[in-house]
Length: 368
Image: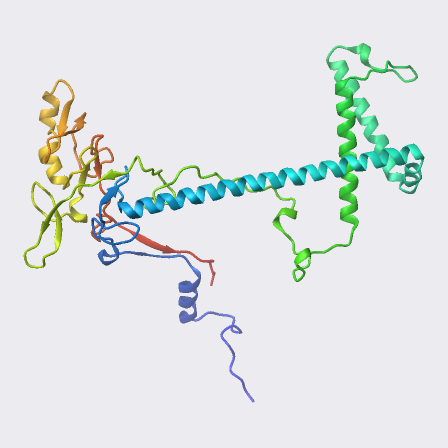
């Protein structure tokens, strides 16, 4: 009776199986279209039309209520993390104190056993300990003599068969105490290693813990200030209540749909992602980038003729909002806008040259 073989028993991959493996086990990316973009003026937290809109210094738009709620939640999380870190430090200090106490008790017990003559019998049973101690003492004496000769203090070198002067100071006492602690620590570790204990995953008291490992804890950079929730993971920026900027949109009502539209006060165009709206920090009025370049920013000829820095006034309220220091040559340059003007966040239009956004999916590579 013949049986059909599975595809895992064949030595080769078919074209269909290779495509399935690539789709399931490789990293894939796709570019988002305009349907996946957030319209301009929408909150980055609740994804709805921003009510009482505010902006961060980088131009991310939020509802005032959403921004305050997020700031409060981040501050609570920071306090909780700080408290957890302090508790972890206290626990580490407690464990260290327990270890030091065990080492001290072990050193006292070894001293008492030595005075009673009981530790020597244990040394006879383990001759390697005596050999190791003798070798360590010889190496220490050799290192001391070499250091004394290099320092020019040849009188400090003790010859064989001669007596040396006994000196007991604070450094010598500290060295002896450290040697006793190290010896006691090694003895405790040897006793723990000799016990036939294995981790048990089904017994709660014997479940292995990360604190029981000898690996050093990974040092993570502690987060000290709230960050903007719309910032990227690789380039976060801080956010605070004092840094929130109130946005003053020019709102009009559409006669046909009765919807409230946010328009540019100069050209009366509806603000969208394609217009790259710009906000003035001081007054909060928003204009499109073309109107800002036409009415607010001076041209190259005016900038070259001007002897000193000229202030830039808002188109709506005539409030000085910035100072022109150099002309703007292209809207795509990083330093296109002077200080005082903020380009509001726009996720793009879906074209490859304007706001390209991609989504990526990474998984374990599967070679076929």
